[in-house]
Image: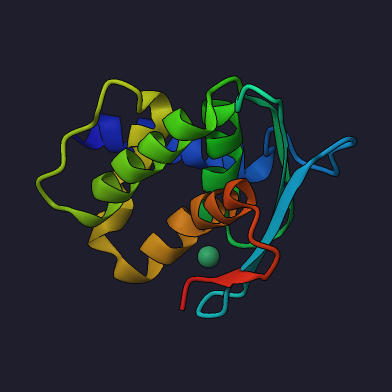
Length: 149
Ligand code: ZN
């Protein structure tokens, strides 16, 4: 298993170092801000959702630890092109994966499974789910900032 662990580690470090879909998003019609005070992670998620409820584009800004940045990076990759409903379902699956010991990866998880290891570190679960909570709030169009507290 240690090879797999190394691979997972490598994917997380890669996304943490060079996050995908990072920066402002022109034309965004959904936006939300999230904080994880326990770690100091701060993130903004911007999305363009079309009239059919499909996420045409999604980007994030902010600063945080490697886990929160990597998770946000992988999330944007994962939900782009999905409908709001599909994204919400994926969040549920992801949340189970990082919080439940017996959760198995669902078919739609793809490389998100590399973050399953955070379930052993409760403090890190908040880092890994911050971007998802923030995306969820953005999709709900809640104007106020979210917090993992
Ligand atoms: Zn963090």
